[in-house]
Image (cartoon, rainbow over all chains, first blue to last red; front, side, top):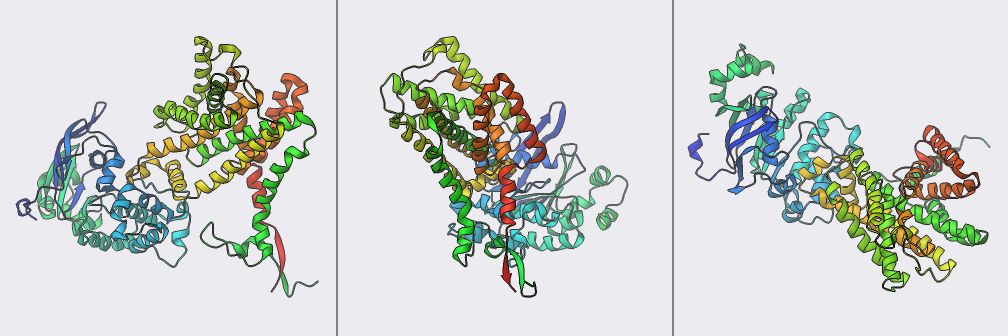
Length: 267
Length: 337
């Protein structure tokens, strides 16, 4: 997609955002526009500032400089729950489910939030009186077998694949407008990833704008229509997957001397 | 008899359904199985004042109940919200002083001062603890430990509310009987009320805050709001207990901010079973009378006390309540195959 084909103002805009931790510069002067319906991939080597970007957008850290806008409103420095309330939800790279609760009760918590009460929960279930039924509906949609015992198991006993889905389900319960997935494929087996890709595509069809941080480039390039490459906290390239793949600087910074096609094949 | 057509089966197996909190009851016997432990606790607590020989031991029962209210508020805050609050004495002292001030200086009757102390004291404690709410774990514990010391030193230094003498001339309850049934009744209401609260959706949010506060924030929920609400519930309970204590002793003074009120409820929670709510009550029923019995030994009683505590931590670290619950669920009966 070319940048000029979308005449609407961007859904999410980062202007000159910087973040320093003491003397370490995690992000320096990053600009980013995310348009409605986009699937934006953020890639980069370890420590390049991908998760810092997400944390800055979702309010978990306050940027040292620059401004962030959501639908034209300045959201810089707002609290995480306020930003989630506006419709930007995120998953965590290190999964953060509520381990002591049964899996379905993990979703009762977002369904209790003010935003879910306003929007009526996932797919506008409307009546939030029965949060447990809605929770199990969402879990079924995301790949938990409804009639099995899995939604009722204690979360700490679930395998990683289900925990990743639970992270996603927690975001979906809030009816997000922007969904930020922080390495949602990492730690999953090939077959689990293969079942996640259609899920992401389905969410995109539902009109959710998606930002994905990913190391698994092949799967990312399947779903993403724009890709931003970060390196040492700076934006290296932004463009379509083809443009990014062709860019010499990306090959140099991210892949060293290897050919990008090889990385794509074996990543 | 032969085991060909009979086998042993756990009673709870038949009545527990997959979703927790739902039971499928088939008979009065199964109903009795569920009700019996609750009935024993309620009937036992209600019968205690009648069974005690003499005024001295009746007074001990009142003190047990007051400690038990503080202990279940500690248990709720520590094991259902994740805020380990060592400031039980802070709640007791604030509640005690508010009840004392309104009774001695404004002439309000105990029936008015006690609810007033609960609400006003709860608000006061929550307001003072508000800056500490972003803290977690041991940091919150240390800060809350300072609050009672801080209050006691302020009252001493500025010589307000009677200074080191405390507030004298406070009304007592109309009779010893009223006093005991009042505190026992309050304890039972709080115990079953909290048990109900932690099973609601709001209780679920409290548990989620304990488990993973970042995820709750990412779910669009203001965790400070819920933490403050939980602190208000717990501190209002503590203040109410403190107000009762003031009216029982007819005196409120800086010894109500003493460390005892912070430490004993925690010890009772450890012995009774953390996170069970009923456990701390049982712990107080053991610890407070033991401490009275050991009074003859003077300061040596601390040694006995510590020994009991260490023994429990070593050999029954999950507490009496968890142990008893496990044993109760293992009761078997013969059934036809």
